[in-house]
Image 1 (cartoon, one colour):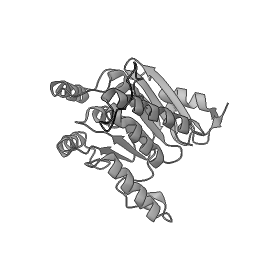
Image 2 (cartoon, rainbow, N blue to C red):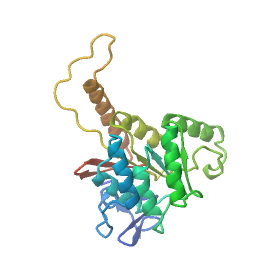
Image 3 (cartoon, one colour):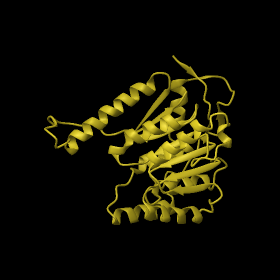
Image 4 (cartoon, rainbow, N blue to C red):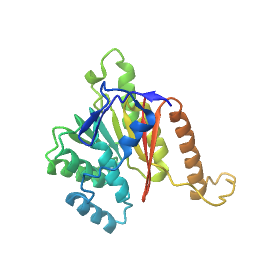
Length: 266
């Protein structure tokens, strides 16, 4: 069994794991990371519940509650320097994380919420102020691809500087990225997050659903049908998992609303 060091500090049941303590196996680390916190209230926070109702009225897709609460539980165990949420929407998952980090001793040094929709960005900015988090949280109203490209460019052009000293769109180093985007965007978002994140950093993403049925062949210049695009996206997901599994740590938490995947970069 491959042995790994947990470069991030994990806090489970009041104890700290990693950070120089005895080695744990890859399987043990990922199992602890992705497990449910049985001592934590699993009810939806009041602010998040209100946002969820708004999303239903707007006919927006909600991340399943089982996934939202498990992401919150995982983040409660991670001492992150700089965290990023890709896909802010109108702040539903952000509210879960703000509820966690505004009451717990563990919160990231910075939290950046990527939401390209400027109207949604205004809503998230109000949420930040509601939690008095202006000193450490900020919404970035640009696409994840743009943010990734600019951050990588800054890092490459200033490679002699320590990451903490970079004047980057994202405070560096990033060691926690949570992905909450539509299914067809998840593979690219997770791939970019994995490339950006620092050694020992964690990416959390909901696994795309497995395609079913015969979708046929792509004909002419019409491009793929939605069903064919879903198959292509899932194939790309499998390739990403194969790549990550070669030298890095993977964990899977099967939940009623889907499978939450944790990628711990070596």
